[in-house]
Image (cartoon, rainbow over all chains, first blue to last red; front, side, top):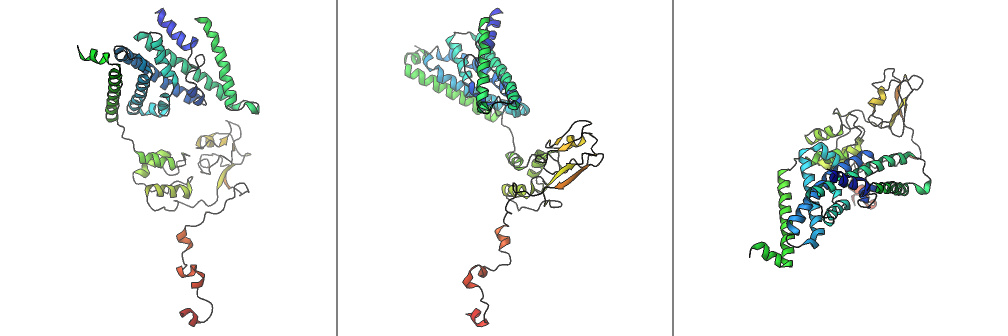
Length: 191
Length: 214
């Protein structure tokens, strides 16, 4: 039980994928203009990342390791992630058109989210078991969603703030992200 | 020696089999999903919807642009959209490959915007709720006003006003929004012209009938 809490806490806060490990920065900057889209992207990523962490664990443990093919894990994981994303997209489109309208645009974007591949690779590097691997994936996604939502809320404020001209647009967003990153460094004391 | 051992001893073969097998399995899953979860979308509705102005004003008699797009796809006429004007009708006619009719109802020649006579406004917010493009500013028991640059001139705010303080005013043309008139279609410009009139040397010279015959 304590292990579970430690893994989740570490993935969400201490080793936050975006602000501490700097993975998945592209959607972090790209879809954080509006709170609404950020929430959509966050939930889509959470869903896909958890599923991708589980399936890449299965592929790694039951196909790659028995055949001595660990060196192929990157390319195999990319394949797994692409399939999971595409399958999720089809499934959601059929089962819940409303959810598809909210998440639809973001689903293909997740394929190129390097946090997804990062989680799969770190799971193998850290020798996580099945439960740990899926929890780590879920925690990473929850951390991603958390900072995405926080950041987009800040950017909505920034959009109406009186920012000096040279800092307008992406400049102030990057500075804000940097300061958020500094703040998240504070969580390393938890570990 | 079983199959797995045999494959595992040949690194190249193992890699090929593993990745190839994964790809085939995944391809099968996706192919199955594509058939199983096929969505009967109507692409023509999407394309019609994309051409409509999305003001959701309801002047076509449908509760919004998308319902009207669905109605067009089911055979409704395409000239019921005043905010889109003739340009939208032409685009729709082009997409659906039908002749472009004139805009239904009285032709809106001049662009108009709503204007609130502020001295009479009682601040009931009814026009704010009616406005499809959020072009009316104000709060309860405060006077309202129209953001002229956002107003599409759709008339929807006029009717709900309990004190009739909203009027539609034509927009004066300024240097900033003046445009050349769109030239009439070629067919109309040539109407009444004989092909002979186009070529100067073919025109009848204002001389004698003998010359013309020659």
